[in-house]
Amino acid sequence: MTNATRDAGNRRQALRRLATAMCAGVAAPVIAQDKARALREMQIHRVEALGLEIWVENHGVLQGFGATFAGKAQGDAVDVRVFIGQSPGRLPVAMQAYTLRGKLDHLDEPIRRSWGKVKYLA
Image (cartoon, rainbow, N blue to C red):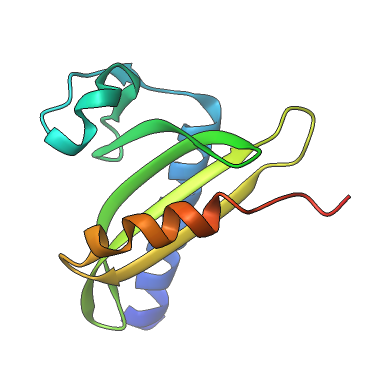
């Protein structure tokens, strides 16, 4: 097994754990230190096993959880934003966006607008 194959498997496994934790609601409340998240500090949860903070989000008809974390894509350092949500009685939807490290804040508004327009087909 090559290092690239092993790394890809580790990333997939980490994303599966993240999705499971976010959908299962396994979290403990934590007080936010970040100014940008001050308005939703009661909705931020820390998942110690993954070293992540997740928070409650709504995008259009979807209600769920979002997280932001650092990663690597093709050897470059990136920031990743993930949202996993669903409408009551519908299947879950996962959305992700990534960009060069430190540039994710520039995508806040485009992500909010595009993810807010997601709807189920039928």
